[in-house]
Image (cartoon, rainbow, N blue to C red; front, side):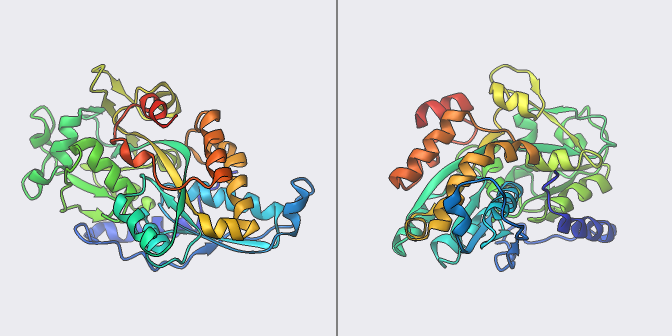
Length: 364
């Protein structure tokens, strides 16, 4: 089953309508999607199989945050509701930053989807409000650079070329592909990507520009809606952008992926399950996460059941929506964190772009 939401077709149509006059949405400010109303997963009749104790559960679980993690959480919510018809799971795509505020400052959600590790400032905000969170990596993603199908000049880009395209020094200055590389054609550069509230924005910026680096703010379109990014890039020959691997798989008819030169090997590597699992898609391979409110989980059996279900059934659903499952022992590690109530972030001490094998060695 394709779990990417049908409601996003609306944004595809919207994108086609606005491309004639490209809209710039808050490239230098916060996302205005923080107030998006969660879209409930439709409850289904209880499954005939599953844990007997779970069938009697009831309540409402609120999940919000990263658009990258959204397809996984929506798929998990749908399957969880089939086995637990008395539990309603609301899942919203609001951006990682907005999800962090909802969890740590407002206390309005139970599970935070995040496409980057929680920041220390976010964890401090949680602590200030008496909230502890359990960090659970749920999948690998290959953050994918995309270009128009008409682009036949840049099948592979180096990190330095990506810095030239997306770096802050290029704002208002680098506006043509031939400024990125003299061998590229005289073609206007049009940039589409996530907002500053996005974990994908944060991860890409750190992985490409380095820790403490910045991102140019003059995007042609900045949005939390990945279909708009795909259609923007598709609609302009000089278009370029980036988003998660699941959306690359969803929109391959509209865009093409760019290979990225591995800084260590010098080889062009395309985003995909194989290159993520082999540890060769660097520096843009990354783990993605959920954060669960520990106090709520310990007092509400339906939330504990949802966390357990996510770790048990998630690996299969991760593959179905287009991401890469973690090694089995990492899900076991997550189960131990849930069982022992271990809070805080381990991954936020590991710099973006660290090879996956090295990151896992540090975690374990």
